[in-house]
Image (cartoon, rainbow, N blue to C red; front, side, top):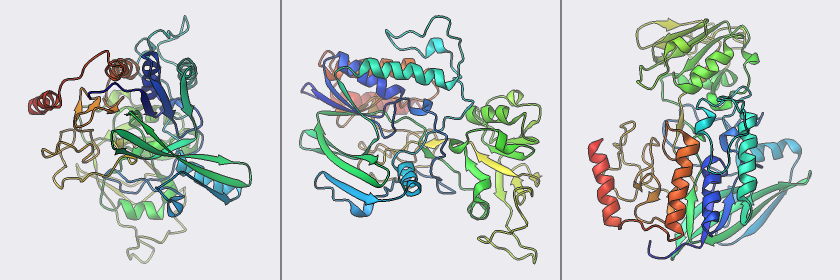
Length: 442
């Protein structure tokens, strides 16, 4: 990266995007923030709507498909207008800006003392753990502070990002609706650099468990991902199976405790699982799921697509087999708390090596340009920020299991210093050597 950056596009207005915009602008750069939702906040933006359903199973990072895909012409900016009713618009809007995973009872699980940005303290007396609406208000204030001299484009989804010559080109769509006509306005703009700050919680990960596809087709409303969870009262007197045993699963279990009859939390025995003692009194830790029973009608014949009308919400689902040899046969609802794929569907597609199956390990097979393989990590980044082959593409907010606000702001400060010319990145060869040594130590 030999020349100083002047114009920067930031994709996402959550914690990492707001931090990036704030410090890039303070460094004197021209900043444009793209946010597909109607407001800042990222995962702290509560939306009662549920997001579109993922595939069941969904064991690899999905590619996004837009409602207006059949009308697209990538060569220029254009407007597409369709007359639709409110119901159809709601479906289009849900695809354009899917709701995030924030649920009604969500609180932070890291103290507010570690969720504080530079020069923007929490109000005096703020407790360590607070409701999501207070965190959203805090981020609104940060967005307001960083908006001076920056351009925030809400309801604007980034569809494609690619390099053309020395600059990055972004194709985005702005969605509007006047009650009769929905308008999808495409715009194409060029920037010196692009910051990807889209977070971790978008593309649901659903493991490929035998029998799951047939079960979901027959009872689509009784099997969901935690991204769709909003409130506990719909699970009253139900036996609920939570697949996964990390933070979201345990938090949802505690919310369900006063409402559900029994809660079963399925665990693979990961070192990252939360202790079973954190479950409510009616919660039980069980083994990992090995398969779901075949669906049979009254004649005993197998069927994978026809719903048995006698098996309504009051009847248990077919049996669920666990890896320790036991079986659950009184489950009414299943929630997959199995996490998310890392996915950047707006970036150019890259090949996925067939051997990329080692969870949590770098599996790029020596390919020095890959960003995503199996969806468990982002490859080829210097300091988890700068894309080594071309540091004018950068990522803020990639690390997991950290004090997100603080670390992501530290990343944004380093990014702004590099792009403003106040700090110099190592050569590509030096960054590559450091990255390879990091992999060797894993």
